[in-house]
Length: 239
Image (tube, rainbow, N blue to C red):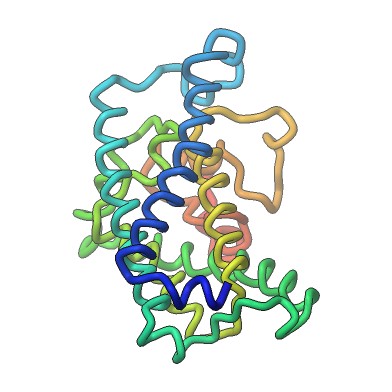
């Protein structure tokens, strides 16, 4: 992996990230949308959180801003992976360097740290100084899986900052970063799906789709991403 990265130019790395991110978006948000809104729409209507369905203009807007987000994400990842910057990061490419247990621990740590980062930056985006950017995402009051990455470019940059900063703070395997990215895409597609599975309706710790749907509907509270820890602790949970 080390040798492969070192042989790639920045343009090749950028193209790889654009291709990978686009594929992830298609296989998460795209598949969720196909399942819930097209193929099994009739059979799964009873799982819909809000009874109405989005308009075509909403879907087009979500796809447009998601394309911008994918470009911002991909361009931003050139910072830690750039040939000149990478030696100053703690990115490593051989699991044996720190062992399998640290690798697994780092994957869990990244999820927990990212959840905290998202909660506080998300609350910041609801501040009057940043609302003009976050309002793009909240134009989807009845979100769909395509809403998952529908951000203003400034918000997209704030979202990806975690992935840029973390390699300068702790040792992270390139696949651990990839795992967090994939987990984020899957959870975001589910969280914005507009549908809820029966077995997750009463989830206490995991931030289910109902919680985030309420956030889109009412534009306040339920600022968490993966978990409800911070919403419960800081009393921003809304039902």
